[in-house]
Length: 121
Length: 172
Image (tube, rainbow over all chains, first blue to last red; front, side, top):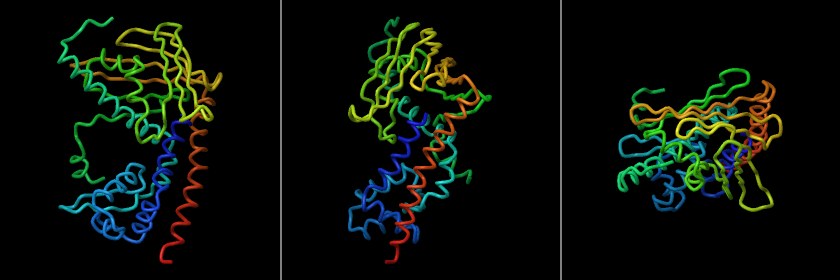
């Protein structure tokens, strides 16, 4: 369990390993911003900035909210305190894992439909 | 939480629950949109298991996965990008009932490891999965949780330092 949680935390550090992403965090520390704002500020394409924000969002450091056509980014609220609940982190691990398992289940169901249900031992 | 926002967020998504059922027990549940034989297969065939056990967000690499799924058979999972820093999980199967029940030991931590019971209950084409971990003592479960909390505390102290450093550079 410890190993798994450590790995989850590694994702946070991985998110912080990039200079642009650290810059985005600094920027969001000053004020919320749209992805377009951030792309302009960091002289990047929208697609490139979306990727960075996606990594930050996945690690929980940033949250985004779509209002109309604008996606606003802000720092993840009270994240460090939430992280300290190991039971919640453990739950998030299983959530992430089971989301992947959903895909495997869908793929196996699709195969069965194509091949017809075959006899399994 | 804003209920309007919650209803927008993928209403069909199944969610895992984790509960400390007693001093020695931890229970994880989740429903899957497929029959038990398929979910069971995904848990017991290494080539399928490897596709989901390590979610991408974990940034962890499953190097090898061996499963001899029969009573007394052993399993071994090896993580890590290279042999210098391996993390291994291993144990043996105590009960194997195809499509409905698996019980195994977790022996990598010595005597303090839990016994895991996994049940698959199919209903209307869906499967309720219940993963039950029984630790040998309250102390062992506390240690697993506290160990995890300690790792996080240590890591967060580093993260805090980094964020302070980032904050200090603002407006420079």
